[in-house]
Length: 225
Image (cartoon, rainbow, N blue to C red; front, side, top):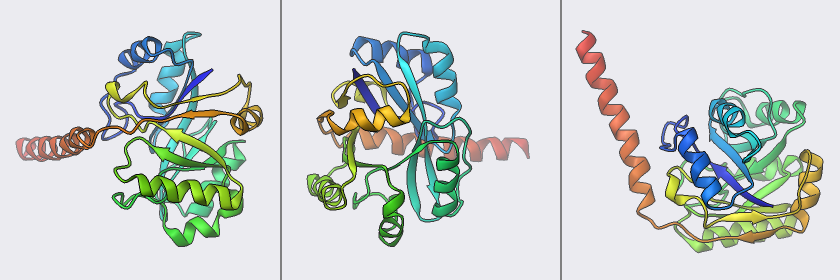
């Protein structure tokens, strides 16, 4: 099975991919399973699960902003609000039977990454470490994540972190089929990580969308006045 992990839709504040277009792209690239991980919401994953049917399986995930940086909850059934403590966020993930993944833990360019003190404090609660993120600019940062996962015996995954459709397809996880989160962890032990770094230009799209929303929001407020 081919899994595209850490995929954003237009339900993320900086995402462009509409659900139906995302389905077409995933099928074109031969992706069997997608882990939709929008920022602080499950709406995209829920909609995709309904619309994709049996064509592409959806793992409902959420990239959650905590008081100590971002983590991803996998196999969620209920949305978790942002800006809770990282300990409370993990508690809510585990209560649902979900898994905890730390995305891009050492990416020097991301202010949103998990704080180092929190990373080591929650070490026993971490199920998976994203050791390669296609949007990371510096390969050394991925190497630090890989060394961290090896040192602490954590399962590894690679993430496309796609915010735009054409980012999907070059980075994926090849693994045996699974039925639930427990089987997923077992499959991940022997998974093959296929990784290719996205070009630096992809960051301009997401930066542009953030500024576009900011400008449009201000114009709309001024218009209301």
